[in-house]
Picture 1 (cartoon, rainbow, N blue to C red):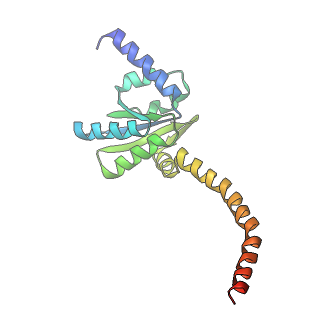
Picture 2 (picture 1 turned 120 degrees about the horizontal axis):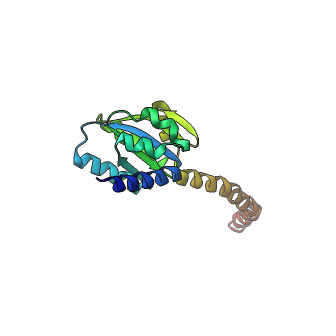
Picture 3 (picture 1 turned 180 degrees about the vertical axis):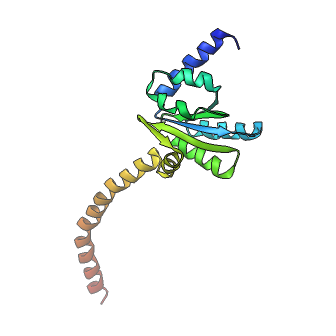
Length: 168
């Protein structure tokens, strides 16, 4: 890879990482091509990305940005997982790391804060944005449903009483 290609790669990574809500730093040693492909596929399905990048290029990409806090984590065989959804990348990486000891979570970055491994794992346990939306909709709909049931209940009681009296 020549210098212009590296500059282009660093520029693209800088843009992608700055747009991401969460960036997770992982160490991946000994992942087979099939395992890496499966992880990338799962990440894409969740709306996230997984990139293996040389540490020097990654350091240049995060230099003078809010993500500069992850520079100390960029040691060894590193890969970055990132997404605009603050939970998607964490969920996929944590799930994969639990089933495969060749991927280890080092830490991450979320909304201006550096995360430890434990922080990333706890982030992965939170419900996704879609799950939260469905819960909110359920909470909003429940009172309306109960009101509808309560408003028709007196008429239903009268109808049952009349039906019982009519049957005698």
